[in-house]
Image 1: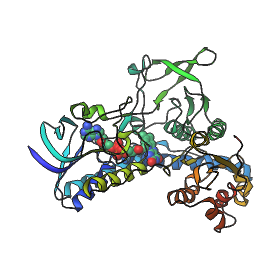
Image 2 (image 1 turned 90 degrees about the vertical axis):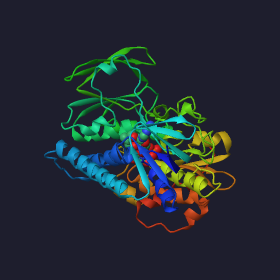
Image 3 (image 1 turned 135 degrees about the horizontal axis):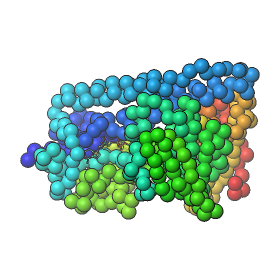
Length: 457
Ligand SMILES: Cc1cc2nc3c(=O)[nH]c(=O)nc-3n(C[C@H](O)[C@H](O)[C@H](O)COP(=O)(O)OP(=O)(O)OC[C@H]3O[C@@H](n4cnc5c(N)ncnc54)[C@H](O)[C@@H]3O)c2cc1C
């Protein structure tokens, strides 16, 4: 049996660990069933944002009317937009595969691995043993048990990328960030989009007032139903019918579309790894349990990225991977800190958020909150941005920012100043004291910190 210092399962954020271990002359095995590079590069962030970039341009052109610009979009080449994305993803994938093949001292096992013993993995019929094992095997689409779903050709975030022709209409089951991002994309392409969300609002992780603005704004271009549970799916390659029940009235409704996209969340890949054959424990959702050093219940087995179910975003996964590598390889004792972990939703309007929501913060802190609209700063007014706003959640005694939330244009860029402040422990006084370019949207951040008050919003 081949023995390694380090085995890494998963080539998404796991590549950070591979590089670190190789840089320290350790023998390393990488196990990945493909596609090499993981979800973000092949099936998630990158392809979806390439598509959404085109959708944003379309939405901007359509909205230019409010500025007195009457523009006409003559043609949207869906095939070209999809192919540009596929070509780029394919090239990056090939580049990565070549890089792995050429890496010295790396044993690459392309196949699905599983534990057969505490520190032993079987892959492609071969057994390998590692002193230290990093589980970075990610997540996959969660497919809900809806009657009839298996009998129709439903799309997921994976198969949607293979579409060659624009669907005339699509039902999206789910209202989280993947659902609203693809909802925005398809609506911009000219597809009739219907979103069916079981919860009372879209994007449940966000502030309720952000979800409200999102529903109102997206609702101009998409049909959005919340509090509705998809219960049965029927159909063929020409037409899909979804039978759903309104959870408030109990009334059954039928929705029809050419295609259906399932985007109800993610499930852990820990089952594929058969972690039950080790001392590694999983929570009730199947995600691998870790302590604050990202070590599993089994010594020298770490779990990073989506597989531990903490905050399932690439930037978080990469930080976790570096931290776990440091703890495991260099004997560090650093705790993972999620307090300034941000995320973005590339819907239209865009959303960005970092730290706690007001509701969460109030459970453990004395808080002050305040908001500012884009239209309160000169650039926002120039842009005729009417609904976007920023909300600050601040600790009353210290002035430390506990959470910050933006909905509106460039939200993922605007929030970076706050992320930096939170990560380095800087209080709101420093943000307010530093000069902000006038007129620029960045003035929204200090503006949103002016009227802090302790009223429940
Ligand atoms: C549609 C979509 C859009 C997204 N957009 C964003 C975004 O804009 N920004 C953002 O930050 N995040 C985004 N995410 C989330 C992001 O993609 C994930 O958080 C990130 O990819 C997780 O990385 P990871 O390394 O944990 O897992 P992955 O990148 O999924 O890597 C896991 C790898 O392990 C392999 N594997 C699994 N089980 C086994 C096994 N038993 N044996 C061998 N190999 C195995 C998998 O095939 C995969 O290659 C998006 C996700 C989706 C689905």
